[in-house]
Image 1 (spheres, helix red, strand yellow):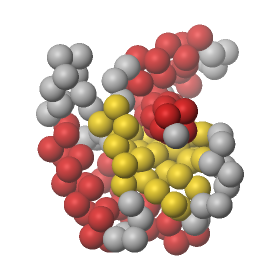
Image 2: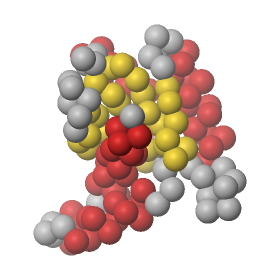
Image 3: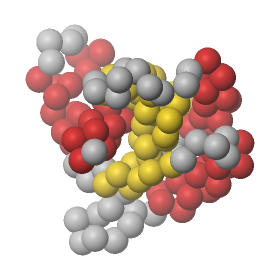
Image 4: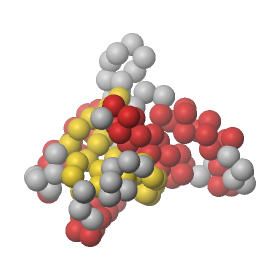
Length: 136
C-alpha cells in the first residue's frame, strides 16, 4: 500500500510527515524552508510511492481561513501541475502548532532542540497526518 504524505505549509518553513506503508502510523519526516518544498517533493516522490498528499487547512477559531491560505492555494496549484496523478486532501489544522509546541516542551530534549522551529513544523505535520488517519 502506498504512503500518505502530509504538509504543514508555512510561508517561511514547512513541515512534512509520512505514514508507514500500511498507512497506520504517522511519523515526522522533515522541516524545510518553504522555498525548497517543490524540489524536495520531486525527490521524495521519485523514490516513494505516495497515494495522497494531505495539506493542513488553516481555519481560525471564528471559522474564517487564515491569510496563509492564499499562499497554500498557490502551492497546491504548483503541486497539482507538477504531480497531477497524486490527489490532495485538506485537514483542519487548528491547534496543531500549539499541541506540537506543548509536546516538544514536555519532551526530554535539551533547550536548543526544543527551540528548533523545523522540529515544531515536523511535529505539526505529523499531527495533521494523524488527524487524517483517525478520521479515515
